[in-house]
Image (cartoon, rainbow, N blue to C red; front, side, top):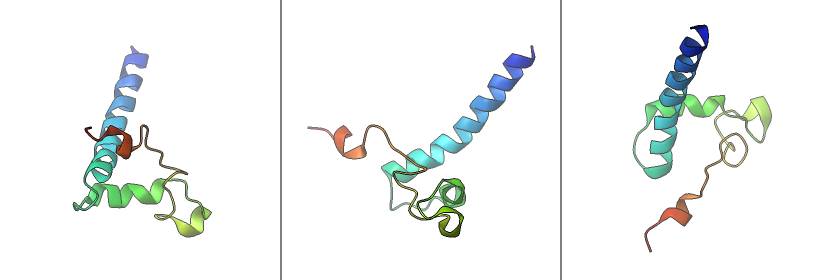
Amino acid sequence: MADKKTNSSGLQLADLVARPIGLSTLRPGQENRAFDVLKHKFFCRGGRKRTGSDYEGWGLKIYPSPESERPR
């Protein structure tokens, strides 16, 4: 029974994080306050001194790249 609750909590956390990240990737010009908070949690190129910047390709990796998913 404990495993079911643990998995559920993990999925809920993943859902809370995935949507703001997805929206920031698909609609970069749209305001996204949830992502503004999350981006300070990613590993950054400059370490703790540079939180919130230089996280693309380090603490945040998008697969496949958005360019490869455009309609042909």
